[in-house]
Length: 353
Image (cartoon, rainbow, N blue to C red):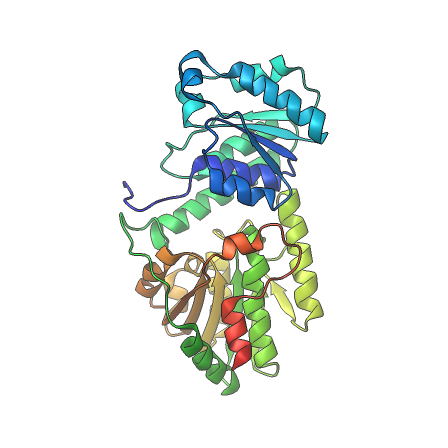
Protein backbone atom coordinates (compact mmCIF):
# COMPACT_ATOMS: atom_id res chain seq x y z
CA UNK A 1 0.00 0.00 0.00
CA UNK A 2 1.23 3.47 -0.88
CA UNK A 3 0.91 5.98 1.95
CA UNK A 4 -0.22 9.52 1.32
CA UNK A 5 0.69 10.83 4.76
CA UNK A 6 4.32 11.21 5.87
CA UNK A 7 5.98 8.08 7.24
CA UNK A 8 9.24 7.59 9.22
CA UNK A 9 12.50 7.53 7.28
CA UNK A 10 14.87 4.57 7.05
CA UNK A 11 17.80 6.97 7.36
CA UNK A 12 16.49 8.35 10.66
CA UNK A 13 15.79 4.82 11.91
CA UNK A 14 19.42 3.93 11.20
CA UNK A 15 20.58 6.93 13.24
CA UNK A 16 18.43 6.03 16.24
CA UNK A 17 19.66 2.45 16.10
CA UNK A 18 23.26 3.68 16.07
CA UNK A 19 22.42 5.71 19.16
CA UNK A 20 21.08 2.59 20.90
CA UNK A 21 24.37 0.84 20.06
CA UNK A 22 26.19 3.60 21.97
CA UNK A 23 27.83 5.02 18.88
CA UNK A 24 29.62 8.28 19.68
CA UNK A 25 29.72 9.81 16.17
CA UNK A 26 27.37 9.21 13.25
CA UNK A 27 28.28 10.64 9.85
CA UNK A 28 25.52 11.24 7.31
CA UNK A 29 26.98 10.96 3.83
CA UNK A 30 24.73 13.36 1.97
CA UNK A 31 23.49 16.97 1.78
CA UNK A 32 23.67 19.03 4.96
CA UNK A 33 19.88 19.24 5.23
CA UNK A 34 19.25 15.50 5.11
CA UNK A 35 17.38 14.36 8.27
CA UNK A 36 18.22 17.75 9.80
CA UNK A 37 15.61 17.77 12.58
CA UNK A 38 16.37 14.29 13.90
CA UNK A 39 20.13 14.77 13.58
CA UNK A 40 19.85 17.83 15.82
CA UNK A 41 17.58 16.01 18.28
CA UNK A 42 19.92 13.04 18.55
CA UNK A 43 22.73 15.32 19.61
CA UNK A 44 20.60 15.97 22.72
CA UNK A 45 21.14 12.28 23.48
CA UNK A 46 24.91 12.58 23.40
CA UNK A 47 25.64 11.24 19.92
CA UNK A 48 27.38 13.70 17.62
CA UNK A 49 25.91 13.76 14.11
CA UNK A 50 28.15 15.11 11.37
CA UNK A 51 27.43 15.47 7.66
CA UNK A 52 29.62 15.39 4.58
CA UNK A 53 27.45 18.23 3.19
CA UNK A 54 27.46 16.90 -0.36
CA UNK A 55 26.71 19.62 -2.93
CA UNK A 56 25.73 19.57 -6.60
CA UNK A 57 29.25 19.06 -7.96
CA UNK A 58 29.72 16.01 -5.72
CA UNK A 59 26.42 14.63 -6.95
CA UNK A 60 28.24 14.26 -10.27
CA UNK A 61 31.87 13.55 -9.38
CA UNK A 62 31.42 11.69 -6.09
CA UNK A 63 32.06 12.49 -2.46
CA UNK A 64 34.45 9.84 -1.18
CA UNK A 65 37.17 12.39 -0.43
CA UNK A 66 34.71 14.44 1.62
CA UNK A 67 33.69 11.38 3.63
CA UNK A 68 37.29 10.41 4.33
CA UNK A 69 38.01 13.95 5.54
CA UNK A 70 35.01 13.96 7.90
CA UNK A 71 35.98 10.54 9.28
CA UNK A 72 39.49 11.77 10.10
CA UNK A 73 38.09 14.99 11.59
CA UNK A 74 35.70 13.04 13.83
CA UNK A 75 38.43 10.76 15.13
CA UNK A 76 40.88 13.59 15.77
CA UNK A 77 38.45 15.98 17.48
CA UNK A 78 36.11 13.66 19.42
CA UNK A 79 38.15 10.53 20.20
CA UNK A 80 35.07 8.32 19.73
CA UNK A 81 34.82 4.69 20.82
CA UNK A 82 32.53 3.83 17.91
CA UNK A 83 31.48 5.53 14.67
CA UNK A 84 28.94 4.80 11.98
CA UNK A 85 28.63 6.10 8.43
CA UNK A 86 25.00 6.27 7.30
CA UNK A 87 24.09 6.51 3.64
CA UNK A 88 21.45 8.82 2.18
CA UNK A 89 19.44 8.91 -1.03
CA UNK A 90 22.16 10.90 -2.77
CA UNK A 91 25.06 8.68 -1.79
CA UNK A 92 23.18 5.51 -2.72
CA UNK A 93 22.00 6.86 -6.09
CA UNK A 94 25.49 7.91 -7.16
CA UNK A 95 26.88 4.59 -5.95
CA UNK A 96 29.22 5.69 -3.14
CA UNK A 97 31.22 2.88 -1.51
CA UNK A 98 31.00 3.75 2.18
CA UNK A 99 33.24 0.93 3.36
CA UNK A 100 35.91 1.91 0.88
CA UNK A 101 35.92 5.44 2.33
CA UNK A 102 36.24 4.08 5.87
CA UNK A 103 39.19 1.96 4.80
CA UNK A 104 40.73 4.83 2.87
CA UNK A 105 40.43 7.30 5.72
CA UNK A 106 42.88 5.32 7.83
CA UNK A 107 40.87 5.72 11.03
CA UNK A 108 41.42 3.25 13.87
CA UNK A 109 38.08 3.80 15.60
CA UNK A 110 35.72 0.82 15.12
CA UNK A 111 33.41 2.06 12.36
CA UNK A 112 30.56 0.45 10.44
CA UNK A 113 28.93 1.42 7.14
CA UNK A 114 25.15 1.43 6.74
CA UNK A 115 24.06 1.47 3.12
CA UNK A 116 20.58 2.95 3.34
CA UNK A 117 18.28 5.49 1.70
CA UNK A 118 14.80 6.88 2.34
CA UNK A 119 13.11 5.02 -0.50
CA UNK A 120 12.11 1.98 1.51
CA UNK A 121 8.38 1.64 2.16
CA UNK A 122 9.01 0.78 5.84
CA UNK A 123 11.54 2.48 8.10
CA UNK A 124 12.58 -0.79 9.75
CA UNK A 125 14.94 -1.25 6.78
CA UNK A 126 17.24 1.30 8.42
CA UNK A 127 17.13 -0.50 11.75
CA UNK A 128 17.94 -3.87 10.23
CA UNK A 129 20.72 -2.54 7.99
CA UNK A 130 22.42 -0.98 11.03
CA UNK A 131 22.06 -4.09 13.17
CA UNK A 132 23.34 -6.39 10.43
CA UNK A 133 26.45 -4.24 10.06
CA UNK A 134 26.85 -4.18 13.86
CA UNK A 135 26.62 -7.96 14.06
CA UNK A 136 29.28 -8.40 11.37
CA UNK A 137 31.52 -6.05 13.34
CA UNK A 138 31.00 -8.05 16.53
CA UNK A 139 29.09 -5.27 18.32
CA UNK A 140 26.07 -7.51 18.92
CA UNK A 141 25.63 -11.28 18.87
CA UNK A 142 23.90 -13.23 16.13
CA UNK A 143 21.28 -14.19 18.72
CA UNK A 144 20.50 -10.52 19.41
CA UNK A 145 20.30 -9.80 15.68
CA UNK A 146 17.75 -12.59 15.21
CA UNK A 147 15.79 -11.27 18.20
CA UNK A 148 15.78 -7.75 16.78
CA UNK A 149 14.69 -8.98 13.35
CA UNK A 150 11.71 -10.70 14.97
CA UNK A 151 10.81 -7.58 16.99
CA UNK A 152 10.96 -5.34 13.92
CA UNK A 153 8.69 -7.75 12.06
CA UNK A 154 6.15 -7.64 14.90
CA UNK A 155 6.33 -3.84 15.24
CA UNK A 156 5.76 -3.49 11.51
CA UNK A 157 2.85 -5.92 11.67
CA UNK A 158 1.16 -3.92 14.45
CA UNK A 159 1.47 -0.67 12.50
CA UNK A 160 0.02 -2.23 9.36
CA UNK A 161 -2.89 -3.89 11.14
CA UNK A 162 -3.88 -1.32 13.75
CA UNK A 163 -1.51 1.63 13.59
CA UNK A 164 -0.61 4.65 11.50
CA UNK A 165 0.15 2.42 8.49
CA UNK A 166 -3.28 0.74 8.40
CA UNK A 167 -4.73 3.24 5.89
CA UNK A 168 -3.42 5.13 2.88
CA UNK A 169 -4.29 8.43 4.58
CA UNK A 170 -5.21 9.14 8.20
CA UNK A 171 -6.36 12.57 9.36
CA UNK A 172 -4.14 13.82 12.22
CA UNK A 173 -5.93 14.61 15.46
CA UNK A 174 -5.07 15.94 18.93
CA UNK A 175 -7.49 13.42 20.43
CA UNK A 176 -9.93 13.93 23.29
CA UNK A 177 -9.73 16.75 25.82
CA UNK A 178 -7.36 15.67 28.55
CA UNK A 179 -9.21 17.26 31.45
CA UNK A 180 -12.45 15.47 30.61
CA UNK A 181 -10.72 12.12 30.22
CA UNK A 182 -8.78 12.71 33.45
CA UNK A 183 -11.97 13.41 35.36
CA UNK A 184 -13.56 10.21 34.07
CA UNK A 185 -10.45 8.13 34.82
CA UNK A 186 -10.29 9.53 38.35
CA UNK A 187 -13.95 8.74 38.84
CA UNK A 188 -13.41 5.14 37.67
CA UNK A 189 -10.41 4.68 39.96
CA UNK A 190 -12.20 6.09 43.01
CA UNK A 191 -15.41 4.13 42.42
CA UNK A 192 -13.90 0.92 43.74
CA UNK A 193 -13.93 -0.70 40.29
CA UNK A 194 -11.03 -2.91 39.30
CA UNK A 195 -8.57 -1.27 36.91
CA UNK A 196 -5.28 -1.80 35.15
CA UNK A 197 -2.63 0.68 34.07
CA UNK A 198 -0.32 -0.50 31.30
CA UNK A 199 2.75 1.13 29.84
CA UNK A 200 3.77 -0.48 26.56
CA UNK A 201 6.18 2.17 25.36
CA UNK A 202 8.75 2.36 22.60
CA UNK A 203 12.27 2.87 23.99
CA UNK A 204 12.98 6.37 25.36
CA UNK A 205 9.36 7.52 25.02
CA UNK A 206 8.84 5.59 28.27
CA UNK A 207 10.45 8.50 30.14
CA UNK A 208 7.15 10.36 29.69
CA UNK A 209 4.61 7.56 29.28
CA UNK A 210 5.67 6.23 32.70
CA UNK A 211 4.55 9.51 34.27
CA UNK A 212 0.91 8.85 33.45
CA UNK A 213 0.97 5.67 35.53
CA UNK A 214 2.67 7.54 38.36
CA UNK A 215 0.08 10.33 38.15
CA UNK A 216 -2.77 7.83 38.41
CA UNK A 217 -1.13 6.32 41.50
CA UNK A 218 -0.53 9.79 42.97
CA UNK A 219 -4.18 10.66 42.41
CA UNK A 220 -5.66 7.36 43.61
CA UNK A 221 -3.05 5.51 45.70
CA UNK A 222 -5.57 3.14 47.28
CA UNK A 223 -7.45 2.22 44.11
CA UNK A 224 -7.70 -1.40 42.95
CA UNK A 225 -5.30 -0.99 40.03
CA UNK A 226 -2.70 -3.41 38.67
CA UNK A 227 0.32 -1.59 37.23
CA UNK A 228 2.16 -3.20 34.30
CA UNK A 229 5.14 -1.88 32.32
CA UNK A 230 7.47 -3.19 29.60
CA UNK A 231 10.63 -2.57 31.62
CA UNK A 232 12.40 -5.92 31.47
CA UNK A 233 16.09 -5.24 30.87
CA UNK A 234 16.73 -6.78 27.46
CA UNK A 235 17.96 -5.29 24.20
CA UNK A 236 20.65 -2.90 23.03
CA UNK A 237 22.81 -1.09 25.61
CA UNK A 238 20.89 2.19 25.84
CA UNK A 239 17.52 0.42 25.91
CA UNK A 240 18.57 -1.69 28.90
CA UNK A 241 19.93 1.32 30.76
CA UNK A 242 16.76 3.34 30.17
CA UNK A 243 14.56 0.48 31.43
CA UNK A 244 16.53 0.23 34.67
CA UNK A 245 16.39 3.97 35.35
CA UNK A 246 12.66 4.20 34.71
CA UNK A 247 11.81 1.11 36.77
CA UNK A 248 13.94 2.30 39.68
CA UNK A 249 12.22 5.70 39.68
CA UNK A 250 8.70 4.27 39.39
CA UNK A 251 9.42 1.91 42.28
CA UNK A 252 10.85 4.72 44.39
CA UNK A 253 7.64 6.68 43.82
CA UNK A 254 5.51 3.96 45.31
CA UNK A 255 4.40 1.84 42.36
CA UNK A 256 4.47 -1.95 42.47
CA UNK A 257 5.21 -2.77 38.83
CA UNK A 258 4.48 -6.05 37.09
CA UNK A 259 6.96 -6.50 34.26
CA UNK A 260 5.80 -7.69 30.86
CA UNK A 261 8.24 -7.24 27.99
CA UNK A 262 11.15 -4.92 27.28
CA UNK A 263 11.25 -1.41 25.83
CA UNK A 264 12.04 -2.75 22.36
CA UNK A 265 9.32 -5.42 22.55
CA UNK A 266 6.35 -3.04 22.34
CA UNK A 267 5.20 -4.58 19.06
CA UNK A 268 5.43 -8.16 20.29
CA UNK A 269 3.70 -7.62 23.64
CA UNK A 270 0.11 -7.43 22.41
CA UNK A 271 -1.13 -10.96 23.00
CA UNK A 272 0.76 -11.33 26.28
CA UNK A 273 -0.75 -8.10 27.60
CA UNK A 274 -4.15 -9.09 26.24
CA UNK A 275 -4.11 -12.42 28.05
CA UNK A 276 -3.11 -10.65 31.25
CA UNK A 277 -6.06 -8.29 30.79
CA UNK A 278 -8.37 -11.29 30.59
CA UNK A 279 -6.92 -12.68 33.80
CA UNK A 280 -7.37 -9.39 35.67
CA UNK A 281 -10.79 -8.68 34.10
CA UNK A 282 -10.75 -4.91 34.79
CA UNK A 283 -13.63 -2.58 34.14
CA UNK A 284 -11.27 0.20 33.00
CA UNK A 285 -7.73 0.43 31.64
CA UNK A 286 -5.17 3.19 31.19
CA UNK A 287 -2.85 2.18 28.32
CA UNK A 288 0.11 4.38 27.38
CA UNK A 289 2.76 4.20 24.67
CA UNK A 290 1.65 1.82 21.92
CA UNK A 291 -1.91 0.92 22.96
CA UNK A 292 -2.75 -0.49 19.52
CA UNK A 293 -0.30 -3.35 20.05
CA UNK A 294 -3.10 -5.04 22.04
CA UNK A 295 -5.63 -6.66 19.67
CA UNK A 296 -9.23 -5.47 19.91
CA UNK A 297 -10.46 -8.87 21.11
CA UNK A 298 -8.79 -8.26 24.49
CA UNK A 299 -10.04 -4.70 25.10
CA UNK A 300 -13.68 -5.10 24.10
CA UNK A 301 -15.89 -4.44 27.11
CA UNK A 302 -13.20 -2.45 28.95
CA UNK A 303 -13.38 1.34 29.24
CA UNK A 304 -10.04 2.27 27.69
CA UNK A 305 -8.10 5.47 28.32
CA UNK A 306 -5.33 5.37 25.73
CA UNK A 307 -2.42 7.76 25.35
CA UNK A 308 -0.20 7.95 22.28
CA UNK A 309 2.28 10.45 20.91
CA UNK A 310 1.04 10.06 17.33
CA UNK A 311 -1.71 12.38 16.03
CA UNK A 312 -2.37 9.83 13.29
CA UNK A 313 -2.91 7.11 15.87
CA UNK A 314 -6.12 8.63 17.25
CA UNK A 315 -8.39 7.44 14.44
CA UNK A 316 -7.11 3.82 14.48
CA UNK A 317 -7.53 3.64 18.27
CA UNK A 318 -11.08 4.96 18.02
CA UNK A 319 -11.72 2.30 15.37
CA UNK A 320 -10.53 -0.29 17.91
CA UNK A 321 -13.21 0.92 20.32
CA UNK A 322 -11.03 2.89 22.73
CA UNK A 323 -13.40 5.42 24.28
CA UNK A 324 -10.83 8.01 25.42
CA UNK A 325 -7.76 8.71 23.24
CA UNK A 326 -5.26 11.42 24.12
CA UNK A 327 -2.10 12.62 22.38
CA UNK A 328 1.07 13.82 24.09
CA UNK A 329 2.25 16.33 21.51
CA UNK A 330 6.03 16.74 21.09
CA UNK A 331 6.66 13.86 23.48
CA UNK A 332 9.66 12.52 21.61
CA UNK A 333 11.76 15.72 21.63
CA UNK A 334 11.07 16.03 25.35
CA UNK A 335 12.39 12.53 26.09
CA UNK A 336 15.64 12.70 24.15
CA UNK A 337 18.72 13.12 26.30
CA UNK A 338 16.86 12.75 29.59
CA UNK A 339 17.81 10.34 32.36
CA UNK A 340 14.76 10.69 34.61
CA UNK A 341 10.99 10.60 34.15
CA UNK A 342 9.48 13.71 32.51
CA UNK A 343 6.08 15.02 33.57
CA UNK A 344 3.42 14.46 30.93
CA UNK A 345 0.61 16.83 30.07
CA UNK A 346 -2.03 14.24 30.93
CA UNK A 347 -0.23 13.46 34.19
CA UNK A 348 -0.16 17.14 35.12
CA UNK A 349 -3.88 17.44 34.37
CA UNK A 350 -4.70 14.33 36.39
CA UNK A 351 -2.75 15.62 39.39
CA UNK A 352 -4.39 19.05 39.14
CA UNK A 353 -7.90 17.73 39.65
